[in-house]
Amino acid sequence: MKPGFSLILAAALLASPAAGATLSVEGAVSPAWVERAGSTDRVPLEVGMSLQNQDRIVTGAGSRALLKLADGSAVKLGENAVVNLDGLAEKRDDRARRLVTASLDVVRGAFRFTTGIFSRQAFERDVRIRVATVTAGIRGTDLWGRSDDQRDLVCLIEGRISVGHAQTGEITMSEPLAFFVAPRQQAPLPVGKVDAAQLRQWAAETELDAVAGGARRRGRFRVEVSTVPDQQAALRDYDAVRRAGYPAVIQPVKSAAAVEYRVRIVNLHSERDAQSVAGKVKALGLAQATVAR
Image 1: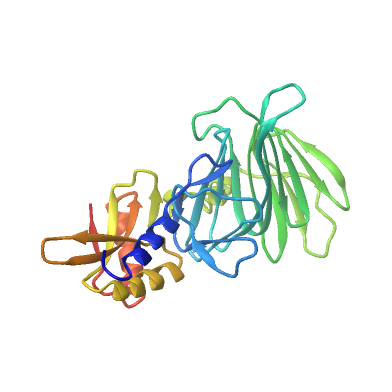
Image 2: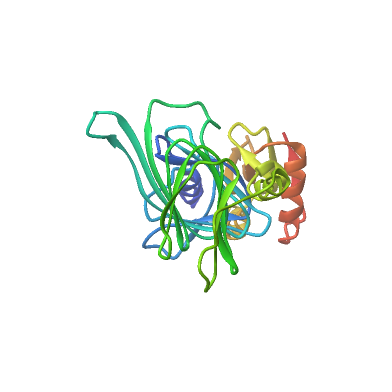
């Protein structure tokens, strides 16, 4: 084994996704990161990654994230979002039913919570989402929300939710397209109703397909960031790409003559997505980046 080869192996292992999480990453448009509790480091958000209590998800400009709960529900995040995770657990309730719990604190940005996106599992759920000043208790439903400098907003697309605010107490919303708005430094407005065109515009803010650069499970395209004979050069490229929020991996390839090191971004959903990522990588100064399948 070449000196330092174990460092490459360690980097690959750190990038490997874990399995069996209450909440995991199903898709992402980079740049996006996970900030782990007790660490000052940011780890690029990676398809297949298991998320943990006290994790903070941060998405960058033009980014998206698609997260999956163990019961098959989806959490979608838009660009420039910050979301804190807690209460992630799978357990039995007092009736011995399997129960998934989660608490998501949307500090900034747009989100969507939707049931039925992935195949449904035999779980009940107890999910609470806090959008800065507004808390939503979820049973089986579909809702969208956003927190920004002007207001906190929750829109019910389908189902039933309980919305809480310090100035209004708890309000039950069951009418499709009903929305609750809490402006900054003002009392919340009465529950209103949004039209379908506005909802489509809002929903696009959290959809992976609305922007290029998406990675998903079993994505067939990749970006070859660099291929170099020197492992230290490979690590420099790897670190530069990951610092920028892209989940690079390193693959050592051994031939009869030598070992070369390939830095890659994998699981990209389409050629369009891969071309978009390659362009962003080139903008980091890695002009040799190419698309492959």
